[in-house]
Image: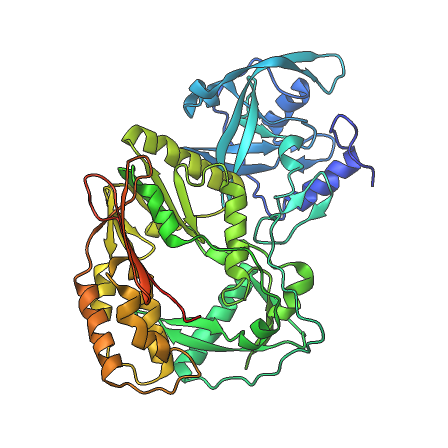
Amino acid sequence: MDAPSPDGRLSKPHRNMLMTQLRDYLHTAIPSPLMDARVKVVDLHKIDREFKTQRYDDIDAPLLYIRIYIGEATSNALIDCGATHNYISQDFMVCVGLGPRVRRKSQPTQVTLADCHTHKSIDRCIDSVPVYFAPHASEIVSFNILDTQFDMILGMSWLRSEDHPVNFYCRTVHHGVVPDRPIRNEIILEAGVVPPRSCIYRMSEEELSVLRAQLDDLLAKGWIRPSSSPYGAPVLFVRKKNNDLRLCIDYRKLKAQTVKNVGPLPRIDDLLERLGCAKFFSKLDLKSGYHQLQIRQEDRYKTTFKTRYGHSEWLVMPFGLTNAPTTFQAAMTTKFLHMLDRFVLIYLDDFLVYSRSLDEHVEHLRTVLDRLLQTKYKANRNKCEFTRQELEYLGHFVMLQSISPLVDKIDAIRVWPEPTNTMEVRSLMGLVGYYQRFITRYSRIAAPLTRLQSPKVPFVFDDDVHRSFQALKTAKLMAPVLSIYNPTLPTRVTTDASGYGIGAQRRPPPLRLCMLGDWRIPPV
C-alpha cells in the first residue's frame, strides 16, 4: 500500500482501509450542530456537505467520531484522515474555557484546502490540552484554532501517534493495553541454566474460585495470555488485612537464575530529608503500579505461571520478579528527573509532592499531574491525598518540619511475640531496623538479636537476647518525634566513639533532634 504523501495526506484506498480499522475501537456518533460557522476546515465544500449528510461522499461511509472530554465539557470529535493537523472551533474553545491558553504562532500555518485553490492562514493555537477519550485513556493534544461547524477535528497529527490501537501513519494495529514505553522489564538469565521445575500447590475451594475469577480478569484486561512455555512457576494465595485473597506467584527459582540489576532504589532517609522546608504535601499512588510497564517481548515466556487451569504468561510486569522494583524506579526517574528533589519524591509507585506555600504547591501539583497525563501513567484516586499539612508516607507520619513512626507500626512492635526461629528474628529486625533512626544506641541494643540472624549461629534465645528484645520494644515505644533536617540552617553534630561503636546526633537550630545514629565497629 502507498505510504502517506509528503504533506501527510493519505490516498483514497489507504484512507478507506484505515477508516474500516478505526471503527473497531471508535464508536460512530451523530453530533448535533452546536454552532453556525462561516469557514470550514480542510475541504470547505466537502465538510459542509458531509455535515449535512453525515456521509463521506467519495467512500459512501458514515463519518466517524470519538467522544471526548475536556474539563467538564463533552463533545464528538471528527476523525479525518485527510486533515494534516488538529483543529478546534473558536466557539468550542471559548465554551471549555481554553481562551487564556491561546498563543500566537511566530510563523502562521498555511493550510491548502482540498480544492487546491483555497488557502487559509492560521496564526493561533493551543498547546498540550488534556483530552480524555471515552473509554480510552487520556492524552495531550495540541490544536490549531479555526471556525468550523465541528467542535474538533482530529487529523493526521493525532492519528499518526503510536499510542493509539490503530496507527494510521505506520498502518499497524496495536493490541497492547499498556503504552509502549522506552523502559521494559528484561529477564536476563545466568549462563547455562535450564527452566526450573515446580509442582502446582494445592488449593481450597475458596482459593480455586478466586483463582478462576482472577485469571478471567487478567485475561480480559490483556495482562496475561495462554502459554506453552517450558517455564511454569506455581501460584499461591496470601490473606490481605481485609481478609481478601491476594494472588502470588512463587518466582523463587526463576529469581535464583536471574542476573541482578545494579540500579539502586532511593534511600528512604535521604528522601525524607528533602522535606525540611515544606509546609504542604500531596500524596499520589499509581494504579496497578508495576502493571503499567511491559515485559520485553523475548522474555515473556520466562514469566509463565501454571495452575490447574493451564499455563499463562505475563505481557505486563508482574510483582515478584527480581528486577521489577529497579526497573519501575528507573522508569519513574526517567520521566520525572527534572522534578526530583525539587518538589517531588518518588519511591516506586508512591509520589509525594511538597512545597513551601499553597500557591507554589498548586503549581507543583499541576506540573506533576500534567506529566502523569503526558506519560500515560494512571493514579489511584482513592489512595491519593491532596494539599495536606500532615500525612503518612513510606511508613512515617510527616508533619510540618518533623516526622515520627506510624502508630500502628509501634503497636505491632509492642505486641510482637518472642521469636522462635531465625526467620521470625529477621522479620522483627526488618521492621525495627526500618525505624532505627528513632532509637538511641540502636546497634548496641540490637546486637544480640542481630547475631541471631546469621544462619551460622545456632538459634538460642538466651537471657541476653531476651533483654535485647525487651529493650528494643521499650525504646520503640519511647521513640521521639524527629525534626526534619534543613540543610540551609547551621547544624550541631554531637559524636562519641569507643572501641565498640560510633554514635552521633544531628541538631539544627533551635537544637531540635533530627537524627539519631550509631554504628557498630566490626572486629578487624
